[in-house]
Length: 517
Image (tube, rainbow, N blue to C red; front, side, top):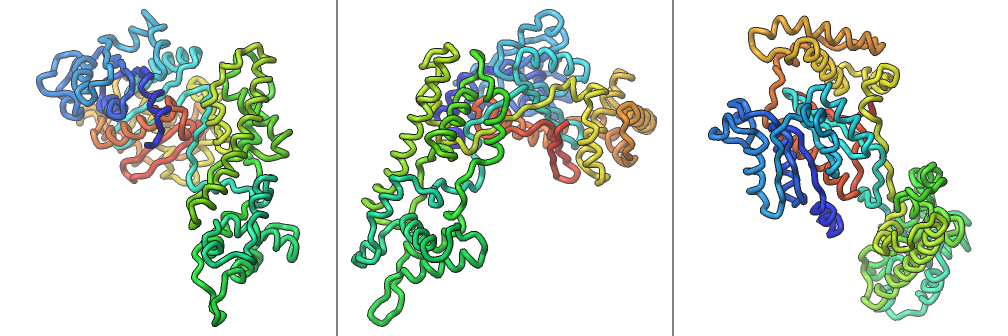
């Protein structure tokens, strides 16, 4: 229902790799196996411990001592027989040493609970191979996700509360002709009360332009005056009382949204002006070729507007009037798609690519979503971790609030520094908590100084992270598993918009935030 048949097809042909069958890793997989991911492979060289059984629903007491990847795969496969599950009893470090090309076979890699040094090696390898990586981590009551993808293009971004594409401010000739075919002044009562509200608004807009102004009603006062104009159009009975005409009520109610200006959204202008759109090559993906075709349509046939979407909302009208109006929009959308298709064919020819390299379905989908296209480009992990490329400004801008979620990011970086120095995480054993608090504080101070961050982190956070002892509570792992699986599905289906690029969840305050780090 959410991503349609074509989204499900993409999901069913995808192969995802999950590194480490931890509580977080198996929760992510559970949420991918249930909707029917094609296949998954777990990479994990660890044996199941008592701790694993305590926080992981996909490991049982009798699995203790067995390979963790194998045990989790068996139970995960029980959720959906159509999904193919595989496992590799090897640590990611060993695989990176012996067979780095192993990771190139996947559509996407999810890394959970990895030490920083391994993560940086893996991220570099996947970045160079153009394979998306999602890092997911549960640390005590903190959840962390990072999306690493060079370029992710989205055709179906499914924005909330979109306005209908009615073009009442710039009616195309066929719509103008259709509206003119109605004569509201000489209609019987039945026809008058079953005229679609779009036609009513269009009729009265013409009247508005002739009598009141050459501009659309914009201010509250103008819109109220326009509503008054519509009210005057309601038929009156012999006593002079207005009839109960629901279609006119609908027209009055829709004034705010129907009178929007037809314009090209700023994010679409940015796509049109993007280098990838201007300088097409033989390697250009179909998204950019079609975006360029739409740009050329706008400059020519579209006369400054995007292709018509071709849909209208449900409304009070008799069937024949509604269908006629619907067909006016549909036919115009078809005409626009054909025009964009011609531009695309010429572009493909000039690039020496076969005309069938872009399918009719791709063309239609992009044209009907041309106002909602999105491009997400994330920074590489090596840029985020490099001293000269570290995004200092983003962190400082959020530190006005001493309890901002960005503090949790700084603490996770300090914890990784602690691991690098001591070969373990702070506070893993109760008797170490006191000692480790001082050590973790000096790791944090060192990190902040090295990165030129003159920000203050409360001591409470240092104590809290020592108390966590790198535990992975199931409640947080389950929440992160749901959130991470959602992002994986977005990347695979090319629908909805992924976050860019870091997501932090605080189980203490039940809040979350995204940052571009």
